[in-house]
Image 1 (cartoon, one colour):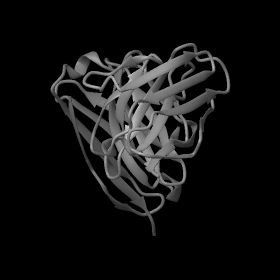
Image 2 (cartoon, chains in turn cyan, purple; image 1 turned 30 degrees about the vertical axis):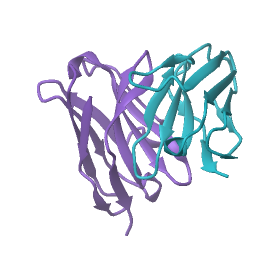
Image 3 (tube, each protein chain N blue to C red; image 1 turned 60 degrees about the vertical axis):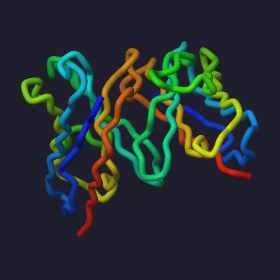
Image 4 (spheres, rainbow over the protein chains, first blue to last red; image 1 turned 120 degrees about the vertical axis):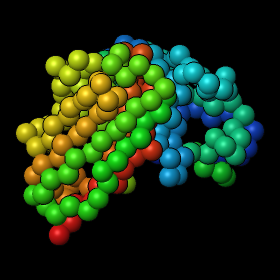
Length: 108
Length: 117
């Protein structure tokens, strides 16, 4: 089973800052990585798949990079609507499809 | 893409429950579908997936032998039959549509299942 480790667990930022979230896989997953945003009381929303492809309708402020075992999600100029929990998920070695434990982006 | 789950409820340990998910806005029969659950303690956990024709299915080890995923393409519907439920099955259950070869590109609003005596 591929274990995904996200860091940090919580990120405190001010509006307008650029933030970088990390996701590390326990073994290579090539580029089979997705990122999700989840706000309280809502379902997760797909942001990025294939490590770097934005999903339909996702703002260009979100970008994903990486391959193999190291991945990052960057959010440019964080705005109030971006404060949420972000999850990574791998789909290279399945089953099971696995998720990271999440990074909470909160207002400083 | 719209996915609407139903079947939420309180069930006793050892009991059964069936979750349903009705899809619209896309050609349901063209996509793998999955169930994903979420708890505060364990976060997001993939539960089960089913191929477009229903002939290939996968389950997380924790539910193998107890849960059954199925679909009815004529009704644009996905199901999760839960049997022998345990307290640890308490979670919000989401149905999700596959995209890009294994990401989850559309999610329902979620349905809460509570297993308690």
